Length: 90
Image 1 (cartoon, rainbow, N blue to C red):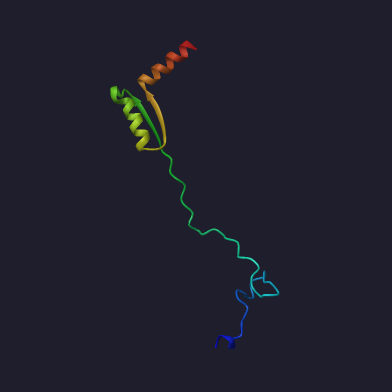
Image 2: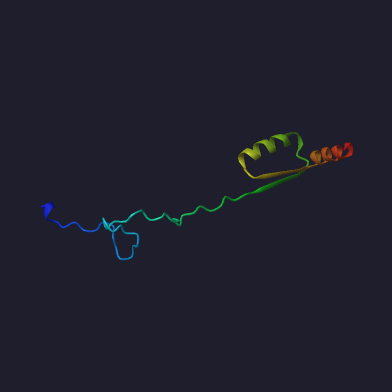
């Protein structure tokens, strides 16, 4: 029965222009395009700590930066004093 079926052009249609003349099939697969499922860009947060944080301030920055990714700014009194001392030495 399979020998009675007339083989036809596989993958050929009137809208496709890259058909091989000998096999009537496409010469190459269509170029892949965008799927439309692009991921949203990740949200970037920034955190600023100011004031007097006490003895646990170092742990705040260490734990916070691991648990809350983003940009961290240290504006505590201790850090500002250290910056001023460094500027005075310079």
